[in-house]
Image 1 (cartoon, helix red, strand yellow):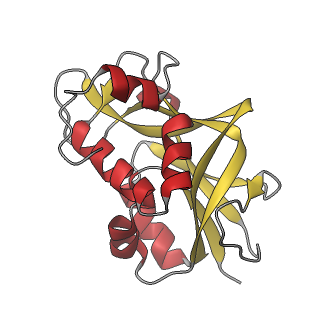
Image 2 (image 1 turned 120 degrees about the horizontal axis):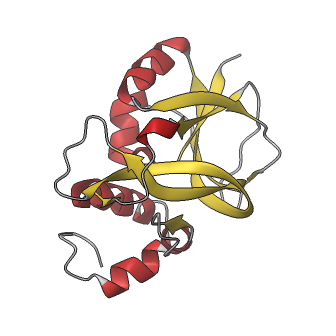
Length: 179
């Protein structure tokens, strides 16, 4: 039996998913008990100034985020993704908080994994890398309007501000393809 991986940042983008995993079975999901935050300092993506954050999730009883469940992940996939996800640790998680709310459902078999940022890379004084944010927003739009709206509402900056509010108050943040 192969495993599953919950992705929540740039890997929600279907182009990035295809490059990382090839043709896999994917399902949009809601994950309770975690908060998605731009508080992880990028390891291999290039930022400038204080714009050097990528997404992370932290345990939080009062929050949830939407992401993609990537099915049928094998050890070869994990070796490749472990290299890609420098600055994160892969942990096994309980399937209980996973909800299928976006019209696609699948049977949960095998272990479920998620990448969590390493403490030493978490910072509260950084903003998203604009090019990375664009990849994430394009990815969220690719799963439909409800998924996109939920992504904006369940993604936070380290200050606690929701991404949707940040984008409204920072229209010239350096994004090219959002709207």
